[in-house]
Amino acid sequence: MAAVAILLVACNDQNDTRLTSGSGEVIFVSGISHPATRVSPDGSQWSAGDQIGIYMTASGTTTPAGFSNVPYEAESSAASTAFKASAAGIYFPEDESPVDFIAYYPYTPTLTDWSYPVDLTDQSAGLAAHDLMYARADSNGNGYVSGSISLGFKHQLSKITLNVVDEEGDALTPDMDGVTFLGMNTTAQFDLQTGELNTITAPAAIAPYQATSNSFAAILFPASFAAGHQVSIRVDDHEYVWDMHESHPGMELKAGFSYTFRITVHTSDAEIEAILVDFGGGSISPWEDGGADNKEVEPVPDLEIPEDYQIIQLFSGGSIESALKNDATASKVAIVLANGGEYATGSFKFPASVTSLILAGKGGTVTPTIDHTGTLQAEGNMELIHFYNLDIKGVPGSNYIMNQETSIELGQILIENCKIHDMRGVLRFKENPTTLDTYTITNSILYNIGDYNLLTVDAGAVLNAEITQSTIYNVAGRGIRMANATQAATVSINECTFDQGPKYAIVEFNSKGGSLTFTNNLIGLPHAEANSVSVVSNQTSLSESGNYYVSDTSWSGTPVGEDCGFTAEQLFAKPANGNFTQSRLTAGDPRWYK
Image (cartoon, rainbow, N blue to C red; front, side, top):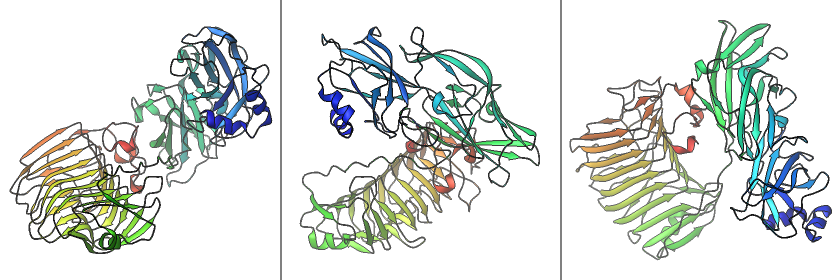
């Protein structure tokens, strides 16, 4: 943190003077750990001149230590900025007693008893003046006696954006001042000592900020939609009312999160429809932008490869097959693909000399891609085949990741943190019995898979199959099919999101039977070629709990789980684009909810 502070001030003579003068003046910086903590109406950054108020208190207390409500202002328009005192600055105590700091935004010069007044009635001029943020800095309870102070601000209120469209989905411009929030509380007192909102009162009309001709945004107090919460929209002097509680009963607006609704005005029958299309957050993140799908990409960590593996670093465009056949000199081999690298594979066999293989993308923000036009096989017995951090695209309807034809013994096949799509099937045991102890898919997305499923056992056996924290959509066959398995299987599926398939049962056992544990999953609509969904067929036993399904799905047989009360369109952000973001259920693939 100190290094970043020095970097920031190196470009500013005034800052350099404060740091090196030895005067004990405190240097404040915001945005080091969490950039873009405030969003102005026109961008994700602090604006030069933005004022914050800062208190210095005795460590571990809220007793002022000489400085109260001192105004500081952002030195630059940037995601990360230093703050300079608007007048006289704050200094560390001369006796070096430890101190803490409390800060808030936006600054107001007159406060009584640490109480900050909040009034959300008129936001038509912009949102920044209503974007209440709060920060505490206490060095993990130890206080500060010197050094620069990083202020990690957090939004204390919620943001809601309405994108108004007509029945055809085109932008619709309401009348001048034609959008009003009704029945929402508009005033409160924010206690700067405790960081809590108090005395939230005065339900009244709120005038939102008009960002574009059909997009309106407002800052609201965190609350659940209740009776009387409405939005009035006037178009051509006709009023249309969205009853927020009726369409989304009990929906909670959380502090620090933004919620974007597509509001469809049906002028032909005087109705209005609201669909939650996006939510964003992390209270220290910028407000999300009007329904945009762009999310900050978290870097994928490097896979920890055991020391007894030979590691082959393969540059973009290199041949995976050649690396295995010509470069591998050990029985345990890890081929690491470059971050953002592009590769191509056809049909080939893993050499019998390789008994454990890791094919991993290097960590980072751009996943390596493999254009996979063939199928892979193993020549001999293998303990492990591990695919990690890869985007593997096949040929729709014609190929597999692996299509094993010869009889071998396999320990585990693990697919982790991958995208696999546009192929006939993922893993198939075609003929000549092969036994696999464990087949695992975790933290992955699989889509556009044909009629040979995520796993097909036409010969041999898979003893254990596990799918966790993954998303599976547009699958034309089954999830797992034990067609001609020679032994019973134990299958576990947990925290997964399904949509547009599988066309048939998610798990299909055969006469050998098996058991399925199905927990905390979320099921969407049937496949486009089917009219119903099912979880399991030919089961020996089914254990299920914590599962939900959308209200407009249809079932073949007894439903598994509970109706979540929302249609697929209401629940998911943009399922047709593979975006299953939703804010109502803590079920399914965790990547889609927070």
